[in-house]
Image 1 (spheres, rainbow, N blue to C red):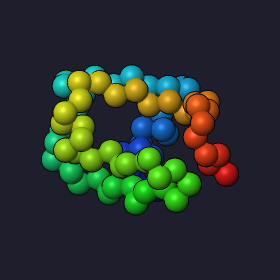
Image 2 (image 1 turned 90 degrees about the horizontal axis):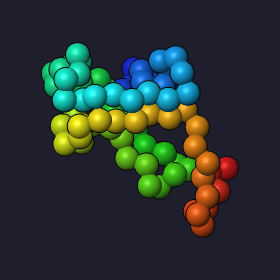
Image 3 (image 1 turned 45 degrees about the vertical axis):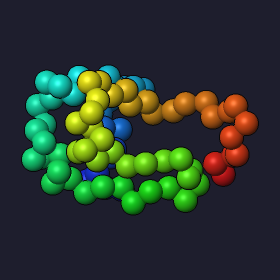
Image 4 (image 1 turned 180 degrees about the vertical axis):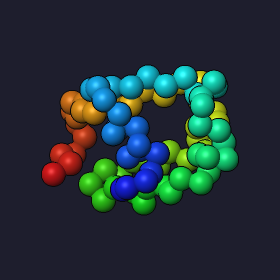
Length: 76
Protein backbone atom coordinates (compact mmCIF):
# COMPACT_ATOMS: atom_id res chain seq x y z
CA UNK A 1 0.00 0.00 0.00
CA UNK A 2 1.54 3.33 -1.05
CA UNK A 3 3.18 5.43 1.63
CA UNK A 4 3.46 2.66 4.22
CA UNK A 5 6.75 1.75 5.82
CA UNK A 6 6.68 -1.61 4.02
CA UNK A 7 6.23 0.14 0.66
CA UNK A 8 9.09 2.53 1.37
CA UNK A 9 11.42 -0.29 2.46
CA UNK A 10 10.71 -2.56 -0.50
CA UNK A 11 11.16 0.38 -2.93
CA UNK A 12 14.86 0.55 -2.00
CA UNK A 13 17.31 -1.14 -4.37
CA UNK A 14 18.48 -4.68 -3.77
CA UNK A 15 16.96 -8.06 -3.00
CA UNK A 16 17.16 -7.35 0.73
CA UNK A 17 17.83 -4.63 3.25
CA UNK A 18 19.28 -4.83 6.79
CA UNK A 19 18.31 -1.87 8.96
CA UNK A 20 19.85 -0.89 12.28
CA UNK A 21 16.82 0.56 14.06
CA UNK A 22 18.47 1.83 17.23
CA UNK A 23 20.31 4.50 15.25
CA UNK A 24 17.77 5.03 12.46
CA UNK A 25 17.59 8.41 10.78
CA UNK A 26 13.79 8.18 10.69
CA UNK A 27 12.63 9.06 14.21
CA UNK A 28 9.63 7.81 16.20
CA UNK A 29 7.49 10.80 15.20
CA UNK A 30 8.16 10.23 11.50
CA UNK A 31 7.39 6.51 11.85
CA UNK A 32 4.13 7.27 13.66
CA UNK A 33 3.07 9.60 10.84
CA UNK A 34 3.35 6.87 8.18
CA UNK A 35 0.13 5.02 7.24
CA UNK A 36 -0.07 1.38 8.36
CA UNK A 37 -0.77 -1.48 5.98
CA UNK A 38 -4.26 -2.83 6.37
CA UNK A 39 -3.29 -6.49 6.41
CA UNK A 40 -3.22 -9.49 4.10
CA UNK A 41 -6.18 -11.57 2.98
CA UNK A 42 -3.80 -14.25 1.65
CA UNK A 43 -1.53 -14.50 4.68
CA UNK A 44 -3.33 -14.51 8.05
CA UNK A 45 0.02 -14.51 9.89
CA UNK A 46 0.91 -11.06 8.49
CA UNK A 47 1.02 -8.13 10.88
CA UNK A 48 1.87 -4.53 9.95
CA UNK A 49 5.07 -2.79 11.01
CA UNK A 50 4.03 -0.23 13.61
CA UNK A 51 6.15 2.23 15.62
CA UNK A 52 5.44 0.18 18.77
CA UNK A 53 6.67 -3.04 17.14
CA UNK A 54 9.78 -1.37 15.73
CA UNK A 55 10.62 0.19 19.10
CA UNK A 56 11.32 -3.29 20.46
CA UNK A 57 13.70 -4.27 17.65
CA UNK A 58 17.43 -3.64 17.25
CA UNK A 59 17.51 -4.55 13.56
CA UNK A 60 15.09 -5.42 10.78
CA UNK A 61 15.70 -7.56 7.69
CA UNK A 62 13.49 -6.84 4.66
CA UNK A 63 13.59 -9.38 1.83
CA UNK A 64 11.93 -9.05 -1.56
CA UNK A 65 11.20 -12.78 -1.88
CA UNK A 66 11.31 -15.86 0.30
CA UNK A 67 10.45 -19.51 -0.21
CA UNK A 68 7.18 -20.34 1.50
CA UNK A 69 7.02 -23.96 2.64
CA UNK A 70 6.96 -26.08 5.81
CA UNK A 71 3.31 -27.08 5.66
CA UNK A 72 1.81 -23.62 5.31
CA UNK A 73 -1.14 -23.18 3.01
CA UNK A 74 -0.37 -21.70 -0.43
CA UNK A 75 -0.73 -17.91 -0.73
CA UNK A 76 -2.42 -17.99 -4.14
